[in-house]
Image 1 (spheres, rainbow, N blue to C red):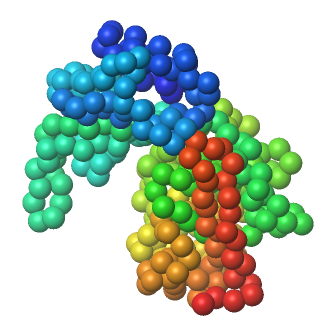
Image 2 (image 1 turned 45 degrees about the vertical axis):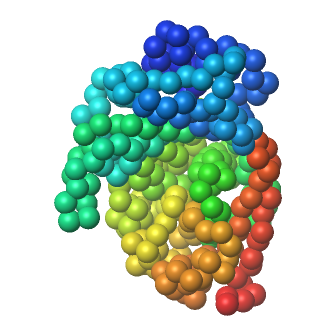
Length: 300
């Protein structure tokens, strides 16, 4: 059962039937990146880069109780166990299935203490795609040496899909490196991609602590980390001092905007990353385009 079928199984009968008919007519399920439900408002599917909200001539609108029931089923009736991450806006399930959530929150001092009611649930659909890393592997892995790289793009382009494929390739047949994957939100691991790899997963660890623990205890040959920010700078600098290459991602429109962030500029000046790689791709396409900056030549 793939991720789409898991979502369908959790829907009320009518919505399940309509969406199942839509997906059966879709030419390529790999082009489905998100299924989103909104209480009292139209559901949508992001397919081939377009947001589709009319299915077989109908809009699908879940009531607030129905949406709560769908989320509960996705969580196997254990929503309460995800309370801390729901407060941070997400739920991560098995095999990289992630649900972004928002709703009515109780806050204090700038912190969300509890979400009383979920009003939107965005299910991101992961895919088994080894080939998306083809364009970067000759750069990342050159003459049996792994080079550090920071991969950046705006949200939704596919950085996690790309870094997942690179981790699986580096830890898999042909390369066989010990890869420590700091998977803070549990969305990189997919059983089908990593079943025979030499990857160790630090699932749920804060990124800074995970990088530090991986460096100190796992003797990794590569560290992979998704979505780094200012809080991880010192841990990344410490890892760089051990000589362990790092492959990480960050949100950013372009290299100039990255360098406006104090922490990322500090990492650049310290030579943590050999490459800064901007990522883009046309809507609905699997193939990425890359803007590659080799920092061995300059850092400005």
